[in-house]
Amino acid sequence: MFNTEIYLSTFIYIILFLLFITICVLQLGLAVKKRKDRAYYLKYLTLMSSGLVYNVVEGLLPDKNFGINTMAQNILAWTVGVGVAYYYIMYLKNEYNLTFFKKISFERIGIFVLLTLIILFILPYTITQSLETSRQFFPGFFLALLSLALFGVFRQQYKKFKKNDHVLFRVHDINGFLSFLGLVSLPATIVVFGDNQLIEQTCFSFGFLVCSIDFFLYPKRKKIKQERLFNELSSRESEILTLLLDNPSLKYSEISNRLNISEKALSSHLSNIYKKTGIRNKKEIEKLSASSRELLSMSSENLS
Image 1 (cartoon, rainbow, N blue to C red):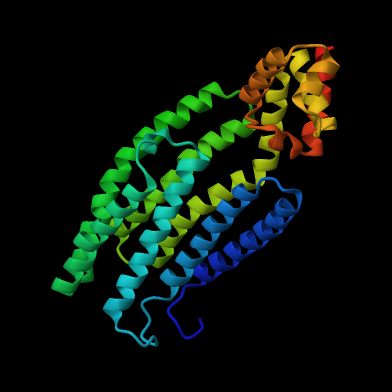
Image 2: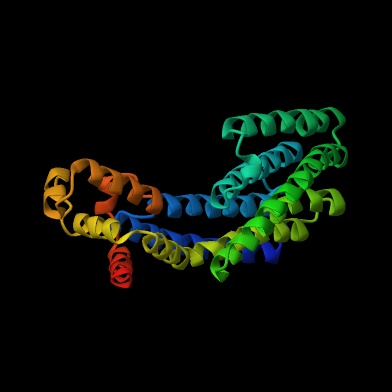
């Protein structure tokens, strides 16, 4: 296909990733327009773009029609693969709140991975001229590390799964483990099957597709989360938040006068509102969507 050694399955993955990227770009456009969730959609867009790059590079290289030698192509392909895997694990860390990696900074992980790639893959490859030899060192090392991490991720996600009582949050917990399993499968398939493009890309792409399930469920999951948060507000807190939503330009002194409470009491109520809802300041209150306002209204009616 295209005068390269690319598999039909890889071509299908490329089309699939392009489809998800297109959907995300449309969602991101709406998010920018509505000024909400831009960061979330941008992170997912970056994830899927990296997955697309991975499939393109791994599918095309090495190729005798390229103008560089096979060794350089292999090093390039492996470097791209490692870079994509690095961003992938950072995405999982944030999306699923993987506390197993909480104390490790992005920079330290990046430096560690880069040095390991040079020492365990690039140097042995250039010295021995054997891809088979160097391919065992680097993936084998990370397979051992990620297998240990997989156990920690499983324990964490299982605890959250038992704690959550809604199916969407439980799906999110399961997907957190499955997506990490997709990462572990990358070095595992290389160690077990060698240079098998079909198996390697299928297993790793599986992790991206699992993340996509949570991407499509995100709006519903967010709505349920907001509803639960608003239900935790007291009647007075709901009254204050509703007043701020309807009159975002009101000063705190004006609010306290309207509600006939002291500014100190108002400050205490606002602190509770911010803590319960995750809202950080008055500007974020102004950005609350219409659906959030409806949920708050329903919550207020239930309290009354």
